Length: 400
Image (cartoon, rainbow, N blue to C red):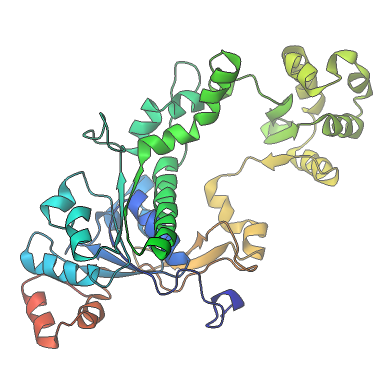
């Protein structure tokens, strides 16, 4: 046990109980962040288990990625016995988190207005497609808001909008839900009252593209898509080099430009008055970049990486996600931890990208099996063995 997780130095949200009614990515990310930071997170699943457990293709890794450090109980919320069990759990909770379609929780009697009357100290986090307004009736997905929120336009080439290569809005939307919950906990310390927190995909996406909106506000010129943009930095590109390898290289300051030129024997370019400042070089990219690409083309990616690293210049190999399992930095710094996959096999999963007192918050509980903690949780809220057996007979709850 690390010092950061020891009883004398507990995780910051130890003692906080969260009951989450979530699936897919956005809602589970909120619970993941709180769970990694010490909260007891109880995942309420349908009898057949969270559908995320059974996704194929790009969704096949969702459940083990976003559901560690959680407990699971499976309840049929279409039956009053299931709702009653959920209400008993909620009565012990500090936070309820959900990401169902608008109106679903109200139909179940599990909406904020109803629950706040039972417990005014409750914090209720809703993860939606849109904050309340003209769009809030629409069904949103990460890709939907990327398209309508300008991110796909900025990511793709002109005329070819392209979604970002990961679930950026789902993940960040869940993070902002958790940040809102943290703020609400602090506010409750001061006021004694809970509140409703709302986080939304569309508004998250707009926050992501704010820099491009403000570029237009500052310059009066629309931001070009990233592949054809005028970069703020002169050398900030992927280079194709020896044997067709690719590497990202950058020199983003006048000092780095001088180091770069000296390292590769580009004294004439360093002395060229047309290339004196970064802004000069940005305006000269049309004729400057072909010269640089030609000059570096016969070097291998490894050779270039060695020179850039030696001279403390920014560079990066072009890495596929699966190669990160063997990344020496991630493995040396404890950035990956063993996690149980949906089929019971073990793999490694990235941990939170921050440290507390030098330690990455780790895995205390493996992603739960469907209903794995159902019996213990029901006992804790007052159900007898006989009542639990009766609920199982009625298929209200299920433990593997």
